[in-house]
Length: 605
Image (cartoon, rainbow, N blue to C red):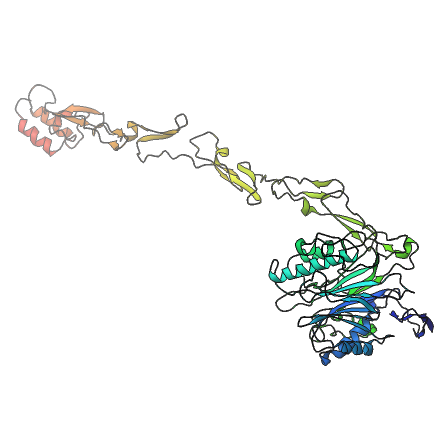
């Protein structure tokens, strides 16, 4: 067994030297939420919780077991509860808290303004300098204010608490958002007033120098960002009512918006959402980081915890579900005060990225300067890596993208910054296409160019460009005019067809029917017979022969001697000496000739 002075498991019992036996049973103590151990790292760390219990704590007995397990696991020193209904009294809260977490002297309760529901501060420590609103007044439900009087034997300073439950709902710029802004302006003014800064509203509260201040509760940050900015920076919007801008921290800097996370998921939402709205971080804790440091902080969500962690913490997986306790999750911070700080290592919070904490001459830890991981290279994503305790500067090619396609993909070089890309190569290997990069379609255009295939010749036809198979030969010019007697040819000199008439193409090799001619339109035209009048055409010797007169001798008359010669020629062609027998002119010596011969027999030829 180990004897503990003043506190057991983080619970203070005042400045008197009360000896309490703490049975650790050999179990190692230390903050390890992933293992279900929520024990403070330092027993003197002050654990503060903000919890909107959705009107269920105490008022709904069906939730008793869940709230009991939650509060026992968290073992808080100070709680800012939101949404107690009118039927819950101070004694109801005192008795219930003493029943769950007994503490020497009992729990202290400070009621805020009632507006349908109220905000309540509950503390193991005495609560003094109590108020229910600022001057000038804030807005919805006021501000529940008190000084938690910490034991002087353990702490050099007390802690000033401002519990809030700002107006719900609405949109940026709406009436609800304006009420949240009024509350933020009032809180910023009050923090400056508490530091002793002269304010137009008068100096209504003056705290001992360097008193830590914590603003916590359900801030309902669902509209614009200005209310949050005002609380953090002191940038007051309604200066006519609440005075000029004023910093909230003692070192005249911004106060810190804690934004803890679920250790099992890293999620920062504290309201679990509904069917219409997504989960969000409505519940916040702001604090003066120049005076106190955060030893640990977390959001308790039993629905994300492992089975072993739940068992170790004495919790059940459904304890923080909206159906069992509240639609909000408890937000927890362990604050570490300056007493005992003598050298810088006393202030080390074990976090690399927020810089090296230092111990000032008053024994108070001062925040370090966050590590600057900016490498001066515009395209790298620069961040501090808590795991490797070093800076990561990761090249981000996307940040170099100039939005153009054709000049290629820009890349990020971790040393020499953005580098130009390699221009897109649109050459398709086809000689006759016009290759170009199209910025509008982010693609290559390979347009066939017919002119590039032209070989300058007319007669072999028009060459064409095929986008795949390159230049293709044209179809030779067809000069056939359909006229059989013309000689058809392509004239490369005139880039046209020649169709020259050639009479010989019409010659049928016959003399007697005349000379055929070639007409370029009518084709072959029949000739006129060459032998006219008293002549007949002799095809054999291509001549015109006068009709015969029967006089073979010739002696001027037709007699029997001529008859004998006629008969020799009878039935023969009228040539080879038989010409006198062709009296009818039909090329044959036939009966017609015989009749004509007999008619002349005995007469003159």
